[in-house]
Image (tube, rainbow, N blue to C red):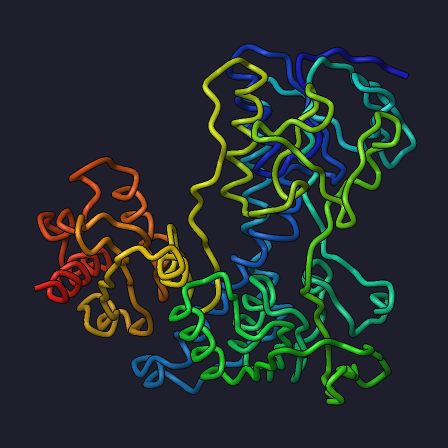
Length: 463
């Protein structure tokens, strides 16, 4: 067995692993990265963020084509199959793999493809699909193995009509009806995607409202838009059984309801990829969802072994994972450390959602004297030009100091728009007030000018 010595070994090449490895390499360290798939990018590139967002983009274009009056002068609305749309989305995956492979080559990072398993606290054995094995030793390790869909034992995922958020990317037909169990971020995004393709969707939510961590008004807006696209949302429901047959899937709910559809998508929870790491050999133990516990410097119970990204749970966002990976290697390198906690939320439903800072509910509970500034996209020239008039920008600010406390956006380009407000929130003193948006000239017509419109709206509430 070949033996290799490194300064740092990173397990997993998703956003967290990639940033940890590159950061260390740029500081002159000898780095190896292990990826169990046959190409780099991790679950983010191959199963999660990139495929679903590329798929969403294709569906959004189809929806625009089928609803735009100008295109109706050319011909009738077009129907596109799910496999056809998915095939076009795979182009983006290939581009991402090529790009990320160059990152490792440019930074002289050694790549090992296979499953990594700890032999002891300073050694992992990597076994590939051809039964070959190599041993990697290092004084520092970063576990960035990501997560996979949680699969309850009483649901038969081997059935050809029962899918999880990974296997749905292999769907070879377009169902007429679909039941999605779980109305979290993934479930809501896929409800948008499939309804956009004309599929009748039943979205089963185990809670009393959609994405309850969001600002209530934004959550209500998403519910309205999904229903507008024909999605039937069922709140406060839990499954009793899921039964697949030759014609489709029957879901029996504990409330007594019985639902039937052509296909079923499980989108309720994630499990950390730790079961093959050999944690028992080093005395580490994952929780019931396969996640590792870390301290506020991303160190596990073994200080020289860090864990970052989805494998540690919240917030389970690619953006946060990338920063966590860099911070974990900064800790090892003796650089300034930053715990990643001020994170914008990006939810790629149709329309999309993004937010940063406090919600109205949180500010009310904390008895903070806040006020609301709003701008509705239907009132902006840019949205009228593009036709994306559904949505709003909402700024929460302190009534006395005008300090910005939260930014909430729903609509086209929300995940881009929110960053303007995020940048201002990071400033100190007078720079972080609603007046910034009044005193700044925004290009016209743009979506960014919604900040000026909202700021004027908010100030008008005070005087």
